[in-house]
Image (cartoon, rainbow over all chains, first blue to last red; front, top):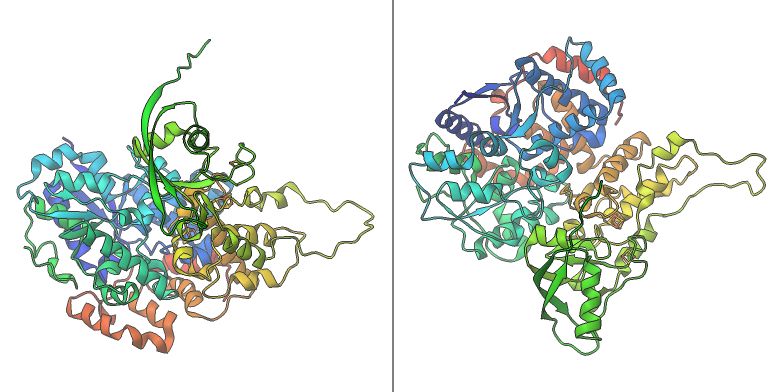
Amino acid sequence: MKKLKYALFTGCTAKQSTPEQMMSTMAVAEKLGIELIELTEASCCGASHLQDYDDFLSLVLNARNIAYAEKHGLTMVTICNTCQLNTAMTKHRLDNNAELKAKVNEKLAEVGLEYKGTSDVTHFLYAIIDDIGLDKIKEMVVTPLSQFNIAPFYGCHNIRPSELQNETHKSPESAYRPTSLDDLIIACGGKNVDYEEKNKCCGFHVELQAPHTAAVLTGNAIAGAMDGNADWMVTPCPLCHLKLDTQTAHASEAIGREVELPVLHMQQMVGLALGCSPAELGLNHHLAKVNFV
Amino acid sequence: MSTEHKITTQQVNFKVFRFNADEDYLPYYEDYSMEVTSEEVVLDILNRIKWDHDGSFSYRRSCRHGICGACAIKVNGRSTLACKESMNDMVDLFGSELTIEPLSIKRVVKDMIIDKGDFWEKHEAVQPYLVADIDENPETENLVSPEDADALDDADLCIQCGACHYACPAVAINEEFFGPAAFAAAYRFSADVRDNSEERLKTVNEMGQGVWDCVKCFECAEVCPKEINPIGKITKLHQMAFQEGIAENNVAVRHAVGFKKSIEKRGVLDEGGLVLYSEGPSIVKHIPVALRMFTKGKIAMPWAIPTSDNMDEIKKLVESSSTAKF
Ligand code: SF4
Ligand code: SF4
Ligand code: FES
């Protein structure tokens, strides 16, 4: 099989508040034989807030990021749901609006770049599922996670809006019945926990401006997983991870119930199953103690 | 050329929410099992429950054409316009066990019928009408160009079904929050070239009730049977607040503006710096969590915050492409 190669858009969080996201991405890529070319020139995607202030600037910056992936001739892979949404949304808008694309390219030309629309944009979760395949992952598992009930937490920006799902992924999943993470848990030998909140919002984006709303959403999500008897949760989004891992005190207070569970990044779960060491996966960087390894 | 059209049937089990506020102390669920044909829509099932099983079963419907907005309910938790949603699609999506519930269990009056009072109050609060000084005897027609009509971006197609409103998690938690349908209406009139309301945008920009409390979950975009994309309109209302100079200097507004400041300095975000800029002195309330994060290596020190390569490009683009002011 030809070695898989992607242009990696790390986003900001993997380099700051979730260093374990970066470590586990690299460890898992190596196990899976994936080559990642990091886009060190990339800027922040705007995290779904910049466009509220300055939509055009957000488009230009995201188009610039994709232009760098195009220079490498590679599919861009993201490791954050919100980076995925903002980048894929930019691509969608520019590929469907020649006038807008021309306006953005006028700006990019000032720095010698051009957005062509030749590179796809996908999340690492879907890259693994679409390009490597669940059967192959299953074959590669050395430490099946068979003793664990694992609660998938999908996060909004990978599964909604489904318009982008349909455009971006080989086997698009439903916003109401997503399966990718459940399937991946099973491929890693674990038992998937089904619970109502698995495709709901964690509240991350209003943490500062609407802390009560944010805390209730976080609390409900962890409580749902706990009621489903989960040993831990797993998410493809570092922002969901941050919310669920670091805000348990506020969440417990908001819903009037003590809630806490270890929340692993999707890469950490896959890494454990593929035999990476806890240190390589950065499992010591969590606030909710990961005490099962 | 003839395409063969085959009607298929399938056994489906329904769990149907029942409650009569005049008689029942608690709600309960009634089970019905039915042979469903691929031709039917969800409303046909509601009709069959009433006509064939229990005449007291209550729900709202009127036009049966997806235009009156009366028939919205939830199927397996998903807001759905009963007269538009095909049973085939529901079975494809959820399988043959379907739970039928009103849009909001909290607001139920009888079975599928809810009190939409909160929805209409919020709708009314955003001035859902044109505010304009109209010359009663104009000399020429008051024309709206096709481009100006396009700017409404289909917001005028809303049928007030409430599917988005009762699917919105922010509405469910925060009683003040106007919700996606009210914002779509606010956008529809604020984007109209003939409108000159000064109040509406201010109203939808207030913290708590306004656009800044939307959690950006895209549920509203997902459920809207008219594909109005309310979150898209919310984004536009945010932008209008800056364009019209009514964005207040508060934590939410600084949070949006802070991204630009961080990007022009480093390309990537300075996460700690962003929180400090957004919160100002009230950042102290985050100290306990920040300390725990620090001990786990989850906070980058100021000297270790990365910077993008080719910063000169980013700086140049920020300078030449940004138009927004704050
Ligand atoms: S995107 Fe905002 S308005 Fe829409 S459902 Fe989510 S919180 Fe509500
Ligand atoms: S925006 Fe869509 S879902 Fe919401 S009330 Fe209007 S038509 Fe219904
Ligand atoms: S009956 Fe009118 S919209 Fe369904």
